[in-house]
Length: 177
Image (cartoon, rainbow, N blue to C red):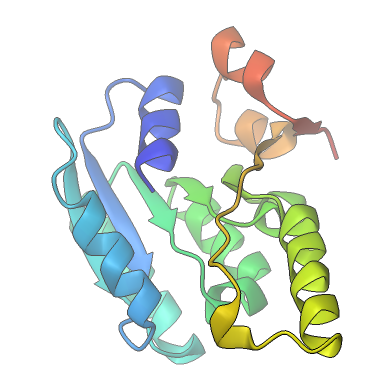
């Protein structure tokens, strides 16, 4: 999440208040929030949504809090609602950064996160080892090593954003559709 916040401030340096859309029922989201709580220069405003009915309310809260942008944490609820979340972010003129590239594929502004292709390949290695008799508890914990930055240029244009060249050069993919 730190890198996502960094990218957001590189795209729009004046960003000061950032909402964080998180699912309070997801323990991984809670730990991400605690880790990002001390980002200098940014005021983070956690806004929870436990189900699809709460997502629209969350965006009303973000707007009321005068958020400049939003980081959408990785959660299956948000992945399933990605088009709706992108529409709400656009309608409320919130700069949004996501953890899965699928969000950028579906009109989200930017995504920065672990490569799902690499994660699937790692999972396949673990499954193979288990099928060959390895005990899951004996396998080492693996961390993602490849991260990708995807920017939806059509969304950036619709928001009137000029993405800095320094960010564009680091992008793994620029979506033009």
